[in-house]
Amino acid sequence: MGSDPEAPFRGIPLAKKTSAMIDGLLNAGAIPALEQTVRFAAQRQRLIAHNVANMSTPDYLTQDVSVSDFQKTLGRAIDERRAQTGGAFGDLKMQPTSELKFDARGELQLVPSTDSDNLLFHDRNNRNLEEEMQKLAENAGVYRTATELLRTRYDLLRGAIRETA
Image 1 (cartoon, rainbow, N blue to C red):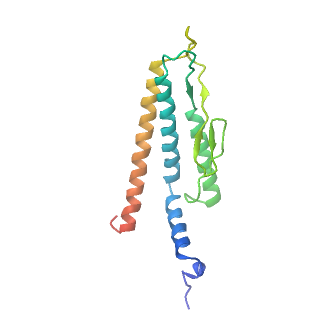
Image 2: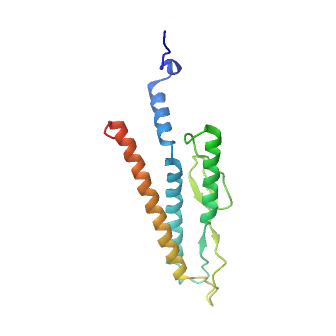
Image 3: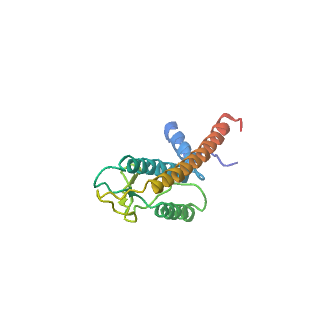
């Protein structure tokens, strides 16, 4: 008579069905992009804080990663996901660059480069406290915004699961 909506799932264990459903929810919309942004900002915050902590260390050269490189890589991954799935669902596969690497689990790893724009002082340190503090503030803003948006997305999912949204 009618089609059976469970037919494609017959023979698949419940745990695998549930896992596939949860993966589908967590790989939908902006969640994967926000998660990558949070990971990037958290790792970059540690890197910049390390630069500040070593301001007076002789021979220390500040390091950083390109925010625009991350943004372009994330944008390409989003465009690729849209092209493959026709929408906002599916895995977000970011391609590695010279500063962005991914381990076997797909976790983001930063490969910083030495910042050569700063002046080299007599102790061979290229410090610029004002610039580092500006980077810290901007990066903290990105992190706060991304975590707040991510929390909102998770709250919507939680409400939908509890049927309270």
